[in-house]
Amino acid sequence: MGKYLVLWSQKPTMPFPTDPAEALKLYEMLWAVVDGLMKKGEVTEFGWFMDGTTGYAIGEGDAVTTFTNVNMFVTYFDMTVEEIIPYEVGKQVNRALLKSLMAAKK
Image (cartoon, rainbow, N blue to C red; front, side, top):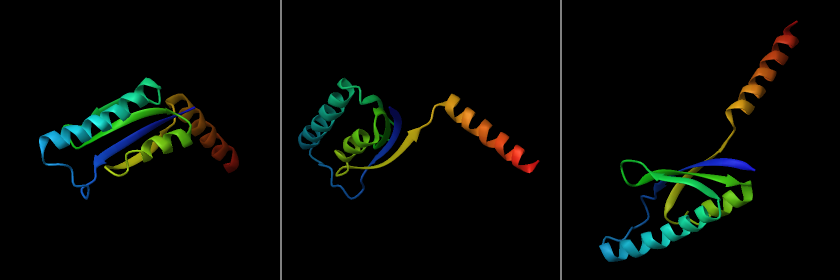
């Protein structure tokens, strides 16, 4: 199972409602989707950055599930998705790579 970091920002081309009642209706719908993903454990963390129009989510699952979840929001948000490699795994890979390069120089 993979872990993914999603950085999101409101699409500048998406005309978000200016009427507070309409804006609330849209946000309630979006929040319900995020709540559902959190209940399923597919999103483990979600937050906003201080500007209020950008933020992040951390999710767990396979690539297809993450792709599906991200694409539910593409109408409203631009997103960058990065798979997270755990520290210990990254350390082991880099150590092995550097050792193999050292051995190749001999």
